[in-house]
Length: 226
Image (tube, rainbow, N blue to C red; front, top):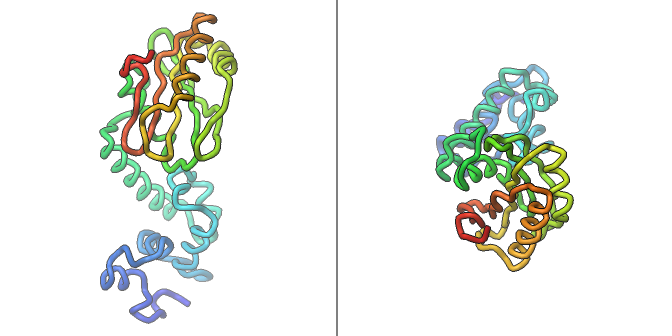
């Protein structure tokens, strides 16, 4: 059934105008964005298939090629969807004071700006390392582990070995606290001290350790713990 053949009270656009956007499903909201379907599938069916295949938090990371695998979605419709989620991402960044992703990292704030997008919508604790050159340039960024909801495990030796392979002079590590609490735990402090000692033995600097939440960050460097 085409959208035009549906009763007015069941059409996404009319429902949004009458009841407000919060009353619509994810598929209905996407249907309003891309507007039209195909001869074989109406726009709502297409969007329902897309939403059944991917979770909402995955949309911003989908490529055009991945979106166009859904029958009825071409490059233009895929670009419309990508644009909406990119705008949403930029709004979130600005709410956290994030205006750019620096190629160089010279402060905890710049480290947070660079790292924060990598933790968006992450419900498990994840450990990330950014490897830094002697000129404070980002060489690479690696997700080292993804743990349970409250822990991430990796040895200091492994992190330092990665830094050596990358020919990095410095390391910034960061992990998230899904609970939203920025303060470091006792285990966080112990693991940071161990990593700092291991890095010094190999003439690598542990520049900072950030704890990231949706509300901000904690910097071991800023707090005098490094």
